[in-house]
Length: 240
Image 1: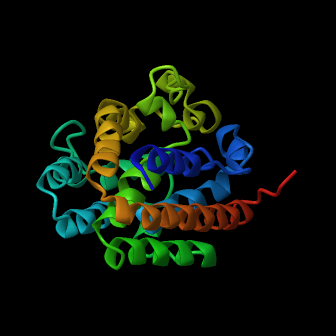
Image 2: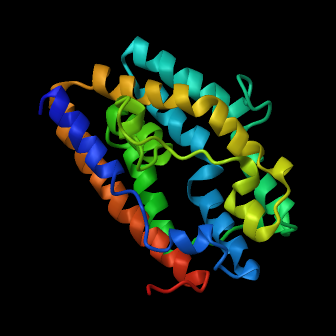
């Protein structure tokens, strides 16, 4: 697989990273008393431990230039020292705190079956399949969006960034704007993180490793969709 084919295969995965139920979450159709389930599952599957997952890619990586990119990302996620001022997992908890949820629930979360399966796959891909797979599933799949092509091509559609006052949690659930600390932090650093992620994969993954990376990304997509199906069902959202 050459570099261009690798790029297109990764983009093809990311352009499918959308879920039928997401419109319910962004339009206020999820009952407020079930919204905590969404936050709990997101937190326990990957948000809380994202620095650990990313760190696994870093410690396995034999390429100094790629390690430096991973280290900068890891430092911000773990400490917030470059932009956010606090670790990103802590900032995530400002969403449920701002919505008046009981944060004690986030100390012992029971994962839904598909969430457990997805987390198991994340652990496998970040521990047992080499640095390139670990870097791809963390910096591209977990951190990325369906708008990744816009991060690479100036003419492609970019991620929408409406004013914070138009954020779905503010509009539909009266979340205070100041509770969007993680959203603000992402807007400050994600441009550089996206560019870094793509440099790591496209410039440093050997040709012989590329097919395995694409296969892992495709497996992540399937597991993530099943996970979001479970979350939707738990939140009372059914396909129309």
